[in-house]
Structures are given as structure tokens and as C-alpha cells.
Length: 139
Length: 139
Length: 139
Image (cartoon, rainbow over all chains, first blue to last red; front, side, top):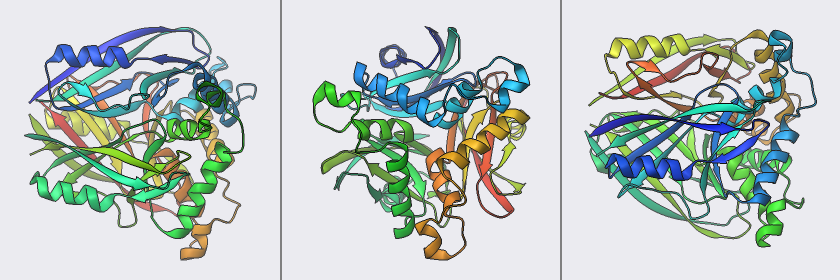
């Protein structure tokens, strides 16, 4: 049994930028030589999230509209009064969607559907150099 | 330490069909002989999700009404223009709720509450033969 | 490779009480002596959830307002007819937010951001003695 942590970073535009990180996960998994187990992705910070969806332009717009509906960006949040950086909506969205995802794999290949990509949502109100950790446990 | 993947399928009706898979998880766990560790369930595909709730008729209706409120099915989504299969709402709901769940176990028994069941939500707009992967890691 | 389960309890006020459990997680992790792996937190029961956010008074209010907006407490739910305990909204909120979180760690230190705390939300409509399980797998 082997356990590996690897931290990657991705340059984001913020403002709900959705980034497909599936290829990075697959590359790290192949390079690890681990055949069977689970891969956990965890995005570090309180204004970004991880989920899966079909990464195509229509759905990318739909997801942006969903977050805007559930947690509008043109509202004032109590958090804004605390720090004055105006990104209360980013924090609330990130907490709702959640920062981690765990995916089983076999033959060093993730059990994702053909149209199911792993996506980081950066909800912050500025570009970020965003870190995420890939943990692999298996044999 | 042992690691196991097992893929099961369940016949769903789609349209937000909620299926209690707790017994399947428990059976696979008992059969594995693994006593202590974590069990991860991952639903393959981009129009289904996993969560836990008390699986009783009232709450099953409540969850359906929640998803309808947050992501209405009678709206047109940008995704619908991409493929023309009219299930944009299914994709958005699945991305919001998420495809994976990890539950610790001891004595080959999941740490679920008495009224806490593991449930797949199939949001697609047609019946599906839905696959999910059970991963067990432990000793 | 080592696997550990530890159950902790926390006294909550219910009604969406948000409790920062980051210090408890870190303590259990340090005491375990495990250096590298993943830590899973799972809250037992169907009226509580786990997520991460910056645990400060403004955001604590914002999260409360989010849950109230998405799943109002002054509405009647079908679940209320089943048991008559009036906490349908608690169950729906818990199912939406989800009961588990997995965080990688290195040098016995969780990969959390500086302003990213692990928080239990107790949505029930009464004070609870709430149990959660910490599972650690690693080496």
C-alpha cells in the first residue's frame, strides 16, 4: 500500500472561473504507478470548490448562473464588513459546494464517466494562483 | 491493509429518482471481511449524485421539491443547446449535489445514524442503468 | 500503513449552530503519529453536515442566511407529517450540504488554508449531543 501527496497550482481568473483539472489528476495517477485505490482532490483556501460535470461551454455558463442565483454577487454579505475585500459571496459559494472530492480508480484509471470532468471553481473576486492537493492511496 | 473496488448497477426511473443503496453498501462491506477503514461510493456519470438522508416518503418528496426549486426543470439551460437532449437541469443538479461520499466503518459496520441512509439521486430525464463504484480501504 | 477511527461528541445548540472542529481534528491527527495520508470527518445523523469556511462572525451569519434562503425554516415539509417533530427543514439542509469531508495531510498537518476551518452545521431544531467520526489512513 502506497500513499502520495502532490500539490499542483493553477492560474485562475477568479469570478467563478471553472477549470478542468481531469488531465492533471490522470497524469499524477499514472506517474504514481498505483493501480487500485482512491484519489482525493482538495482545494486549499476558502473561496474555491471542487465538483464534477461535463466540461462544455453551455454547462459552464449554466453553472455560473446557478451560483449567481443561489448566492448573488451584487448583494452585501456580513463577511464583507469583516475584511472589506468584498468577496463574501465567494466564501458562501465555496462553503456550499465544498472543497474536496474522492474518486476510486482501477488500473491507474479514474472511475469517471465519459462526460464527467473534475472541475475547480474559483469564486474569488480576483485572479488567483490556486493550489490543490492530490492524495493517492492504494496498491 | 486491503483495497477493493466493486461496481454495482441499479435500474433507475430518472427524473430525480432517489434510490436507497445502504443495504448494497453494507453487503459488500461484510463480504469484504475488512473490519476498519473507509468506504467511498462514487456514482459514474454527470447526471446523478450521492448524499445521505432519512429515506422515508415525506423526505423523498421534500428533496424532489428542493431540487426543483434550486434548479427548475421547466427552464431552458445553455447545455440543452449543446446536445439537444433537454437534460441541462439534470447536469446542474448533479454538479451541485456532488458524486461521491466517504463513510468510515468499524467492525465492518458503517458509522451511519439510525435514520441516515445513503441515497443515489438520478436526475436524468430518462430511465438509466446507473453504475456506482464502492471502494473499501482498511484492515 | 495505519487506520484509526475516533468518535468525538460536541454539544450543540441546534438551529443551524456552526461549530469549528478544526482543533479537535488537528489534535487527533497529531496524537495518532500518522504523518502522511487522508483524514475523513463524518457526522453521524441526518440533521447535520460538514463543510469548510472561514470561521468568523460575519460569515457565520452569512451561512445561516444562505441555508434559510435555500431551505426556509418557516415552511411546512412533507417530512413533518411523518414524525411530527417539525424539523423537515433540518433534514433537507443536511442532505444538501452533505455529511462528510476528506482532507489530505503531510507531516501530521492538514492541508487547510489559513482561513479555512472545518465546521459542523447542526440544523436540528433542538440542542444535540452530536457525534462525529474522525478516520485517519496513512503512514
